[in-house]
Length: 420
Image (tube, rainbow, N blue to C red):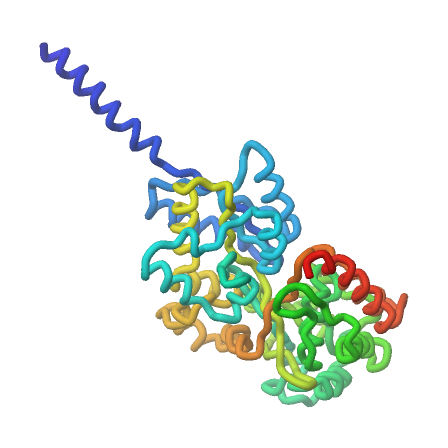
């Protein structure tokens, strides 16, 4: 009898244990890295901490390359037998993802005042790309603005004030000339990888945005936009402070660290790597102005895919809430240089202490006051490709800025006409 009771108890225990194991929700998350450094280790650490606190959720975080690679791989997974439930992808992918009916707005996933407060807690400038037609399709994670890095030691050697970075285009040219030597360029602005992003900054500084807020029109052939591209090219051809041709996005940080350029424009996502690797005194500043100050925001947002089950959507939301919480956002900012995505992140003890010790970590955040949404339209990838090609054609001297941008505008009009 005792034996029978024991077996019954064991069987009952097994029966009770089985549902608990079955209740674990498995998530697959794709994410990109567009700057150097061991960022995959940082993501893995955050995910491991989340799983420890949420044993009912298992997360397979897959590093997928750059932003374009990540979009391709995540969408391929959706069409395969092993789909993803969420991903970090370009903030500017939102229009295309909506058009393809692949994602759900967060308003359909969150519940109650507490989660609404979480959704309302991000910096508005970082929400701009994900807020479309009254709904929120993406929330910020690895977000940036372009900042100006400069070698203070080289400033001193050139007789320049190391605490006074260029604040205007005229000062950029003047200081760049003083910093240019036979071995060192005064300035490098990357024109591969994400040339449209750097160009958007120049256009904004010249008083013009590249697109309208509804994603239906572009302003590539506007005189102020053409003038911005002509200025970019003049930095090498007329002023001689930048190399002629193209400057590589992927190797620019190393070029700065090795003293090949006194100044560079790049993502704030490189900040911690520069801090850890620079063997010289360096500074970080907002981008200079012509008509106005300005930089586009940049980086990746979290998206939840429509094919995820209700249970998976809720698990994905818990992961996103955890990874964007003030404490995690603060840690992410310290470890990478990307900005904390909410004011609350900068109120944490960790990030307050870090920014007091290292004030350059506040530059990208402070620049949000002058920032605009990153370039995004319907047919974003194809419209952006046309603009990238125009930029590189002008910078390499194959076409005039006016001719190249007129062609890009005509191509954009053809692509966008179906959505107007």
